[in-house]
Image (tube, rainbow over the protein chains, first blue to last red):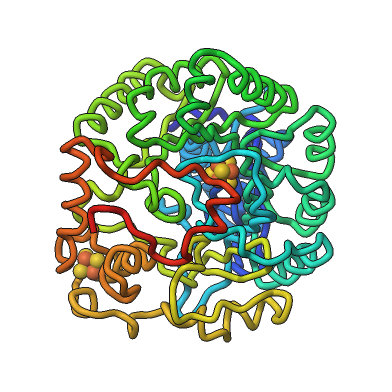
Length: 92
Length: 387
Ligand code: SF4
Ligand code: SF4
């Protein structure tokens, strides 16, 4: 459904850092002079984007962890958006 | 799907997510728009590294996560590296805001090793320096060298240039130079009129025509370079009819600590009269942020006067900038006069009209930020001519 292949390996973009912030009870993406507080599902996806796991691996892991089915489209849509915003980049 | 948002204050008072440490007011440069207080020479001794490190620990425990290290010139401190190392170990995202003066290969290596995340290189031109710079002399060489180090040490290249009447016509040259240096982000920040810029306002405020030309040049660069070099153009608020939501409201997300340890809700706020800003030498960061009278003063809306008090837009801009309200009207609780609903808006339009007529003609001399002048100037409002 989207331009992101299931075999792609997304990683946090160069110069950005993702970390869990207890004070905000959220994953927060940090970059030069800025930050974005992620919602629960965005945080769950981003925290699995390590440049090693493929989109398919991430989907499978999320479906297992949250007992959900059919997350492929949602994950692909988010990864695409995050690539557009340069939060993520793809590793070969 | 909605995936994220800039952090907003929760109901009640949220943590100081942004921490700015002004490590020193010492600086080898003499910028005419310097945002440091005009009486910086009277500010007391700088905190030692051990105190900065305690501040970092206390602020991080409250939830602070974005850290700016600035000054003055932060490289003027030879204990910058251990401060960065501690900040990194605590989990801060560490930004260094520097003119580049004092950066060497040895120091950038040490800073990288300590965990510095990002360097913002700013071009602090006095007019003299700008000329040097545009004619490829000393300053240009220095900046180019630092830019090269930034690239070599794998940092994103982020340039900041403060624009004003005396350099805004060179925006094309400035952007061309940024392109040559391989900048990924360029911030063209029009001067904000506090500190030295306030004293020099009659010299620095551009005309509308200058502004329009600069925006046009910027647009052409954007069109040609696209995402390769992102250019932010910050419009001077004197030309607007609504104020900026300064600091997202004082005391909501931003905490600055001045070189002497004074805690401020904005780095310019030291000038605000009637507020006793607490010092980290005497109080811990938690009690400063949550309990001090100075930090609570401009929270919420109780301090507001008309027209802000009953304005439907007060949740959007919080009445604008308190420092600007004070500098222009003498009362920090007034609406920011940039707002055209403010009864003082004519003070802003008068300054703009003066700039249209040619600006500094007949005004006092351009003041370069300088230790001796700092000793001589009165703290507080000073006086631009178009008051
Ligand atoms: S604005 Fe200029 S003079 Fe002021 S601290 Fe920065 S570099 Fe130094
Ligand atoms: S009157 Fe006050 S609150 Fe309303 S828009 Fe103007 S500055 Fe903002």
